[in-house]
Length: 386
Image (cartoon, rainbow, N blue to C red; front, side, top):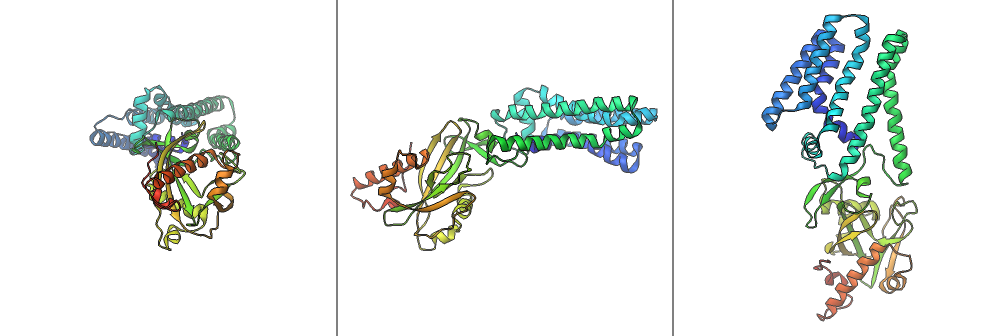
């Protein structure tokens, strides 16, 4: 799971702690304690009224802040001052530990509510818990170092350990996560900011969302993609040659346009975006000659890498096009005869070969209805492949 989403899900419960630290740094411990507890109580009541559920994380943070702040005011000695960062981090540690102990259904529901309705699929839970455990271990180790520095090291050493060291540790963790994502696939995205894809059922209903890498870890996480077949009206179709550094099927010829539908994006928006990105023209450019982009096929495509629901469209346009060289190494028109002659020779992606056969079958069905064999555009409009 994207760590940014995980942090975002923790923020409501940690708001009292953030306010406590910020107000204490500016106005002193007394004001920080009062404001932090007040914010915690107000947030707890607000969630109780709005969601009709008590938020255990907000309640726990507020209680721990009251205890830590009260001790700070009561003791006011150098040792407690040095231990204060550890006490604050203990609040964060307790929140993360509680999330790990929650049943999966409760955890998924809590994160989903805090992320405003985003559904967390079962497949994303192991990744989310793994990130939580790593962060928990790092913070626990830092707390132990703060205690050691407070009692056994100089004030200067304590200052570095309690402050800058934590940022360095998390910086190293972020860089390591980025490097691991890059090693896993040349085109793999960094974990931070990774593209989110919608998860759907066989009827296209959205069930939730998952990261691109989660969707590419094997079949089972069905997500939508769009294809566009570009015909010239004279018996040829435009194909793209995938770049050599593509994660899937590098260097093979494929449909003119193909790409994932992003979370929160509908099919038309995804199609318009992919046309612009891969062909270097706009949808309006394609339709300027009077030809319209029309739906052609819908079918499920399964590989060892992923499960896709393909929504394929067709349009008639003679070109020229300006393909994006970062995504496509080459693009040109192929006659239907040349395509047929190279099927099964490793020239095309398996997905394209399968889709081309579906198109041919649609054309054959049209011939039996005494329709023109060249009217492929018209023949495949209403086909819904199994």
